Image (cartoon, rainbow, N blue to C red; front, side, top):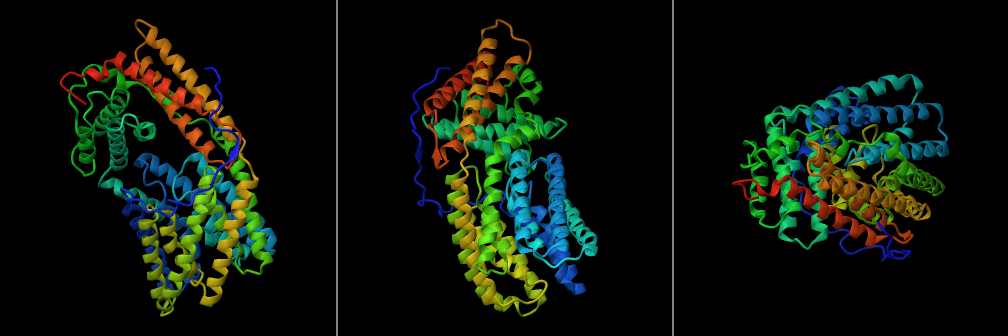
Length: 547
């Protein structure tokens, strides 16, 4: 594909304010992580309360908070993901506890915390573990660094965390007994709704890109479930319908797509669209590992080097500045900085505004709650449980809204060991929030991500290769069985990745020229080729089945 004059020159982007604090709609499954974390946290904390050992709650919380993860993954994949989250949590906690038992030098502790936060951020991004990502891991490991510790107590403290982690794994897997295909149904429903939105607005490139990404995610969900059961086969056919709607929108009824999506929201049978005919045998029986298989972990880690450096530098500097100001809990500044880092500087700025807003309001909420929490240990535990639920219920609407609950919860957790002076806690938290946000963002600006442009070039090359391969198969009179479908899925995945890489690079503040014309042309060509494969496969003419 020939080069074109870029439409966007190197420049400093304007950092947005409008819309950063706007509330969105609640997540489809907002109640699942909210209830899961309460069920995971309550038994260990109430047990410790009964034993009079709330001072150990920090270690059980480390394991319990693993219940926040992997709610969008099918249960077979969720089992593996949660096991790795628990292992990662225990690994970070172990390093923190051993370090805290060997030294009390605050600068050393901040340095170790920053390196742990960078490693956690990089691994969570590379494995796409999803919300809450590295932030919870960094919070636990950083707080543990500054808790008094002896080397002999480390095994028992890790055992408490492991036991709570095993309980959190059980809590995360339990809904599968009632709705074993729930995550795949939700992913398929989202793909159908996104395809309907794209069909209803055929000129909206963003809607088309969002729909393509939703279809790609649905296939990833379905292909990670192992055995192809009857419900999964039915879900596959619905995802195919969403794909066909994108590639051949003419004559597609978006309301029918939405109707199928609504039918998937309950526990009833999966809709079975009629008329797939013989085309479905090749379509649904093909191996799609080539199209959707993950590259090796090392290959996924390399592009994240600038983000890792930003995280390590920003967290370390935030902690050092906090120490210089005499704040007693520098790990709060460290965690604030760690929470900022997103795919690019623009998103990092937005997260910083949200974090500061939520934390300041959360400190005010703590001032209101602390008299109630100080009435007794039981009230303290119940307040933390309520805040756990509120944080997960609200954070999907906007990060700042969830932070209004997270902040007082973090402040109250410090009182599990012994009562603190509220005024000092609130002052330290406000200072650390401001220090972490300012220093963390400065580090994000200082560490430029030059690889963002390289990722676009690599993604463009991948789309070119996939498009040429699909076009060559279209030119053949009789392609090998399954070859055209594999090529179609491979091209679809490449187009989705290109859009992701272009969006990430566009959000960098100082940047080199971006080949936007080439990206747009590659997307248009890719979608035309996808439509041609649909026509060649005859998928848009299923007898008796208007999409």
